[in-house]
Image 1 (cartoon, rainbow, N blue to C red):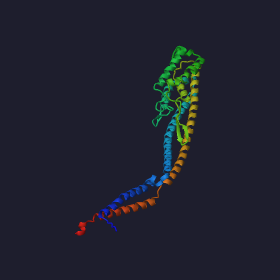
Image 2 (cartoon, rainbow, N blue to C red):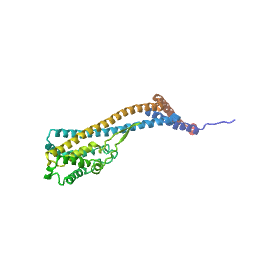
Image 3 (cartoon, rainbow, N blue to C red):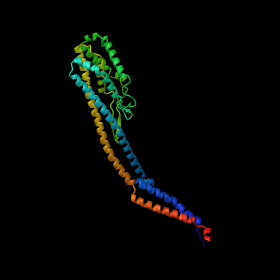
Image 4 (cartoon, rainbow, N blue to C red):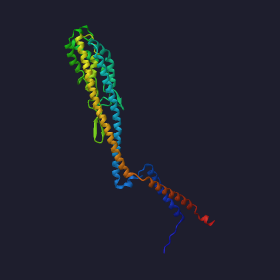
Length: 345
């Protein structure tokens, strides 16, 4: 027959061994109450943990798309605002010139050309969220080159000198016929705003627009390039206006004013079209956000179904673990008081 014995050391170590487990149970239960999900999702779900991870990845992707759409919407709003300013400026100039005679139109255009060019270049070089708005995919550079206006003005003056043998300020300019001036404007000057001259003198923007992913399966165009026809027309109208052609004959001045007003009218129509295109992109982003919200809600519901814990049950486990822990502390303290010397005393 064998006998066993219980030592005071064994009794003392037994509750201490349980304390670590109970402390872990308390921490897990407290975490579940705070987060309303399993403290150890992998342990709780087992083979279904891969589905949970996949759902969370999809939910994170949706959240990232929503954040990206917010930045894109900000850029689109800023772009729309600038397009509206440019259109309003073009319409205002056109309206102001409409009621004037040809000679007064040319003089009025010359007076405002400098301000128009400064405003145009400043607005086209605008940026939002650290990226330029009218550079296409070259968002890290300003679309309009430094010194572009001065270079374009110099090129226009040199072209006039080459074409007619004297500068616009020369008295001989009054001898030029309307046909000669029209040919010069429609040919030589217009060519300075066509490729490749536009890129050489004015622009370092890309003609490729920015495309943004706005949902899990949808992309839209979300930028406008300064290389667009409307912007070239605005710049050309301002350069023509500022060439100092007030010394031309009345018929020739009529050609100049008609040319500038025609460019303003065409540019305004082009700007309206650009605003409409961006407006459709803005509408699609709004619709995409609505769908993303719905998808995100569905993903979150499924995640909660897999990972969520019953807070009442978690609170019961917490209370039980805390009670057992306190009992272990108490028992350990009582066992520590056991001593042969105390027994013999």
